[in-house]
Image (cartoon, rainbow, N blue to C red; front, side, top):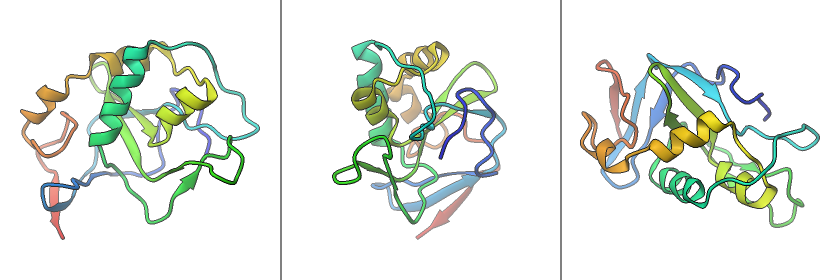
Length: 158
């Protein structure tokens, strides 16, 4: 699935976080922030390439490991890799940006950066480097690794 970097995200009207460890199924809400696409690459479509800081890759992977968001029933294989052995992704990542903006990236974004030389927009790199995972744990929803959950979010139990 391809979206231009920094175009407005419109794949799903709501966001849903699932926590693998705390015992709740999903936290659903209609975002009060604008979501901008980053890293939705597709074979045959050009994308920016270049070096990124190692600290960016480490922080992005740390976020990806704790966030389980908008998980779908199926998986998406990286179509930039040969079909046999291509990594699969299932879900998305949210990175807070400037006030009112969150970046929406596929779960495979770290793979795109490390295996295919993808260089996200600098505003995304800066936003990832600014993430404070410890501060997220102190937010209103401590089992949701993202700080901007609105008051009317609905918790769905398994």
